[in-house]
Each structure stands twice: as C-alpha cells, then as structure tokens.
Length: 112
Image 1 (cartoon, rainbow, N blue to C red):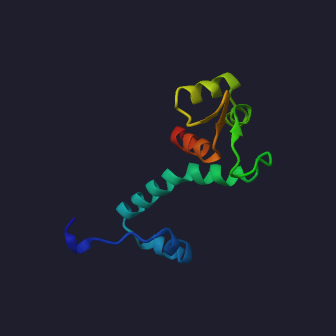
Image 2: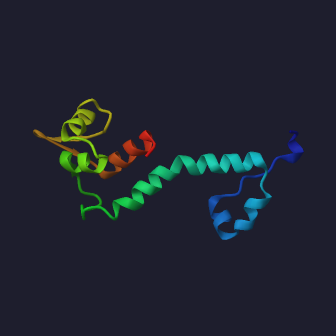
Image 3: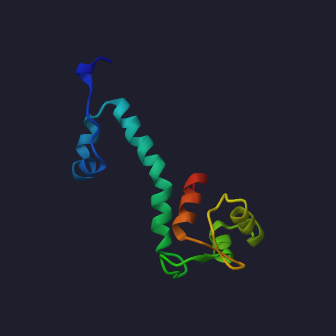
C-alpha cells in the first residue's frame, strides 16, 4: 500500500454521529476499529454493571467477601489474589480492601 492511499481512522464519536462512515473505511481500518472496541469492551461492561450492583458506594472500598461474590470465587481465592498482588488491594491494619476500579482493571485483564 503506498502513501497515497492512507486513510485517517474515524473516531468513535464520528462513527456514532454518522454510522454510514463505517461503510466507507478500508478493511484494515475496520480491523483497527474492531480491535480497539474489543480491548475496551470488558471495561465498559464492568463499569456499566457496577452501577447495578449491591448498592456499594461507587468510590467506596470493597471487602474481600464483596470481591469474592463479584468474582464468583471463594473468599480464600479472593484473599490469595490480593496477597499475591494479582489483584491490587489496600491493607487497613489486618483488613484487606479493594478499590472498585482495581477490580474492574483485574477483570479487564482476565478478559471479562
């Protein structure tokens, strides 16, 4: 492909405003857009679902039992993820807490 055929990738805002633009992009541009969407989709889904959860304050810290419930794992497994540093956590004395955004990031890294 030579430089004369380079096409600017439309922004998501442009595509939302005018979906017909999607029909005019090259296959390579379509691939780039789909890869970008796939990479942020888990974060957007998790973020959307957080508002539907158990009424936990959005910026409040989650307890390990809350984390375990959201991950659908045992509390032991949730503690192990935090202890190993796989899931970023905050220690408050003997208590372990997880920021909602750290749980979101962990889930995105796991693909879901």
